[in-house]
Image (cartoon, rainbow over all chains, first blue to last red; front, top):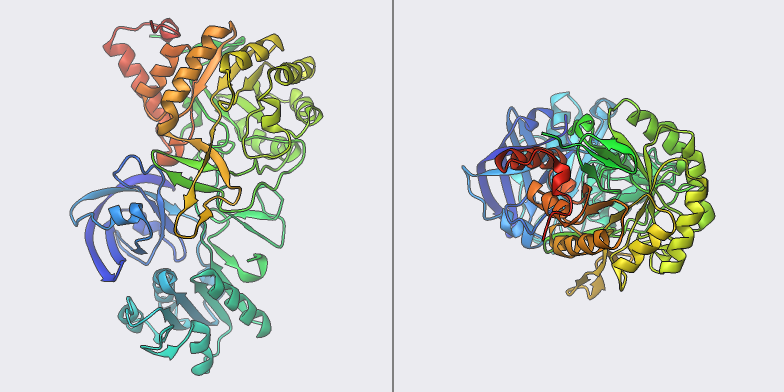
Length: 257
Length: 300
């Protein structure tokens, strides 16, 4: 059940420049599904909205989220220490449907700060015996979470500056390594998601992508975070669906990005 | 101790409602908030037909508040009656439907369709800053506002609340115009028109360029406007704008509001409405207030 609740910070550390890993102790962890997110509230009362952050991992009562500082709000968050409490709203959104992916060959693709949610997905797929491989795209050699992925499945890396792995994007890494799959699951910047959608279409593959948008309520009430859809959306019937409710994970064929 | 109030003949178990657009139709928050405890659920704006709304980004945070330019995305009145109103029927609370339109005829079409339902009241949105045609156009000219109110009153079978814009020269004149048009009540404030610029991209943050400013930062403006409006008319006033605590709500009541709405604060804490109700009761107990009605307009 969705709720706002307080959580204790178990661990909080910087993984790469501006990229932080926070582990919270909360019962919401039990409900967390890959692809879902939680809203983190800040203590500074002038910052009234939650920051939507995807789930990077969940085990028992521990919920791990990895985020990048993108403004003064996330910068404030990055100063919070282990042992302190914070307020979160969760679990939000619809994640990946493991039952649809289970018996297929899956490539999970993460680009930049889109990498963290794919870790939990890869882990959950591995648990049910899925043939899963990960392809991670970084800007440079700050390869945060790479070791975590390597502990779960075969992991391929690309970097834009060529300092590690394939020079270029995750798509370049797929080609260079001749990776084959039935399904692509991806989270990352919009150009990457567009490339994934296109690649899946050309190769007649399934693809599921995680979208992001500026959000206010996170529960489908404000209609702030919509994306254009091919079919009528279930709420308004105007092909404008809510990323926080019907997403953030969508079948790439069904969204117009 | 009495916390019930009456607005245009409609009984409210307490003065606390949700502000339109911040609470969906209640459905979105029902698993977190017991709707039965609310004075009323005020729904998101509903038009005659479905509206797509504006391009994204539609929302952004600003200091002490936020800007929104949703553009009244809504499924239209038919789907709304079939789905949202049906859902609300199971709850023991007043349902106030916020009505929007591009033309007077469109407002009337929605009201006519709702006349046959169990809705308690209509709140007419003549103050949305994010829709190009209509909406705000009806709420910034006193004469047009009076005529619009008259046209809607002619067909409405439920009490009519005119929701006023703060983006006017004289809120008193607008309140009087609504009253002259026959409004049963007024509600204010809708959002203030704001803008945010991304200095790195040198671009507007919102696709719509401007957006409605709401949240705790707007409260002093809202309290002043509610005070002015309440002293300009005899009809009841529903006050809103930056309410996130019982203390905030009490300021509005002392300024002259009979009802109060929690808006943007629902996003900061879904249980804000319930906390406001509890806090009001605690205040009344502590300061020996037997009837909330004795506080209405009691400042001075």
